[in-house]
Amino acid sequence: MTTSERASTGGSASQQPPVVELDNVEIVYDRHFLAVQGVSMEVQESDIVALLGPNGAGKSTVLKMISGIGRSERGEVTRGSVSYKGEDVTNYGANEMVDRGITHILEGRRVFEDLTVEENLRCGLYRDGRRFRFDVEDYRIAFEYFPQLEEILDLKAGYASGGQQQMLVVARALIHRPELLLLDEPSLGLAPKLVRDIFETLVEINREEDITMIIADQNAKRTLEIADYGYVMENGQVELHDPAAELMEREEIKEFYLGTSGDESRYRDIRHYKIRKRWT
Amino acid sequence: MVDVTTFLDITVSGIGLGALYALIAMGFALIYKVTGVLNFAQGQIAMIGAYGVVFLGTGAVLSSPLPAFAALAATIALGIVLGIALERIVFRQFIGEPVLSVIIVTLALGGIFSGFIAFLFGRNFRAYPPELTFGSRIDLVAGATIQTAFAIAVLLALVVVAALMLFFRYTVTGSILRAAATDEQAAMVLGVSIERTIALAWTISIAITAIGGILLAMSSDGAGFSIEATGIIIFAAVVFGGLDSIPGAFIGAIVVGLLQEYGSFYFEGGTAIVDVGPGFGEILPLLFLLVVIVVKPYGLFGTERIERL
Image 1 (cartoon, each protein chain N blue to C red):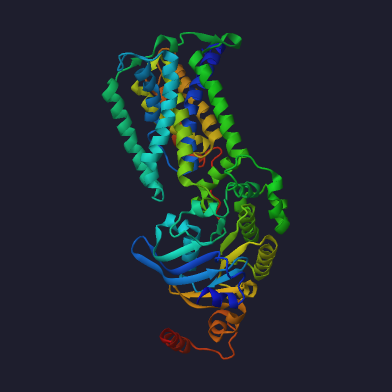
Image 2 (cartoon, rainbow over the protein chains, first blue to last red):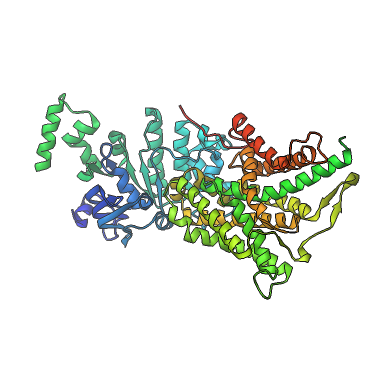
């Protein structure tokens, strides 16, 4: 798909380079383990992009190579290229990507357990000129979207509830003032009500703070509902991609990810379908 | 039997010795807190500080030694350089490797350091320049006195513990160092450079350890290989304090210093109430270590891992 086609599907300003562009990327871990192959992807400014697919499809790997954190796990882009706002950032380290305004919220609510909620938020200030001092005013943006956090500032983050921890990692990332936010499984292990709240807040943040987002999540329905565009990965490859609204109408998506297909499908049919899909 | 003035005297020198240990113990706890590494070369690093002054300030190796206080300053600067160099040359290679490999590396470094010192000076006691040997004692209340080196150590240890506590508690960098210790990756995505974190920790640690080593040597008027053994003794202090706690290391070191002084005064030699035998002063802190590990494995202020079920 070319840029001009992409623009016609509702993306913003076509002359600007996309925020993130993956061109036929192959990612190898530990020099031997091929994790992702031939992935091309475009993320337009101010969009929310959904990255869907089953466990082990390579969603996290893609996010990690965009944020550069994958380099610290011995991941490497061995073919293709990654660019950020038109600049080639293939195989850049996490440091360099943080400097460019990318914040990655890792899978599994990685709060600093031994630190209080307030100290966790404080860590979000580090990017800003490697600062030494802090000011509670700096947390204003976090409290705006997650007022609950203001009440538990002195609580050790390890003792906060799952929902609070998820809010905390998003808030910490917000204080970091990113231009692009990568979220890995923000809904994992949360009650449906909390998932709804978090996703609603993400949309607000996207609109009001103008932060571009890539959300990798197993909860395909919720993610597509808030996304502008969606990619479906399987076995380290992109199987499908379309504007989110169209993607939600696709039969295969309904069947496998949304669970809203009209007919009850049996495993044999699914397998048959998969084989057919590979060959078309 | 137990004379009050003597007891006070011993208590004071116990605290003094403890403060010396505290500097070395805090250097150890700092590394553990930030990088998760148990530094088994700590005693040897203290010894490098101690012999650094001998190297630069006496005629033992150099034909024209530096003036005593210049040698002192240069040795501390050397400690800082050593910290940076070790990170660049050695520890950076082990980022992302299991912590155990780094621990083994510290064992190797300890061997290298002590071998190097033995090569330069032999395993003998080397006297300090006279300007740095305080024969004098400072008078305290109730007839008790304190050795000048101990007095400096107490003040310095208090300054270091306060500075480090404030740093970790109230600054962004301090918080991020603690954060990086609990979750390296999650800190990296916030812009933390792990290399810089490790370099900072090692530099501060080696500098205060070297200062501890120098003061330890000053308290006995010169450097000797006995300083190497403090690497083991401070273990008792740090474990009691809770491994990753800096105030814990401070308090633990004071306790160990007191135990050692009481042990060697009241339990060995002519002054003993119960003569257990020579060297009991050094054994007592290690017995204490065993008790602590059994009774309170996380120490006084150690971080107990939060387990969610």
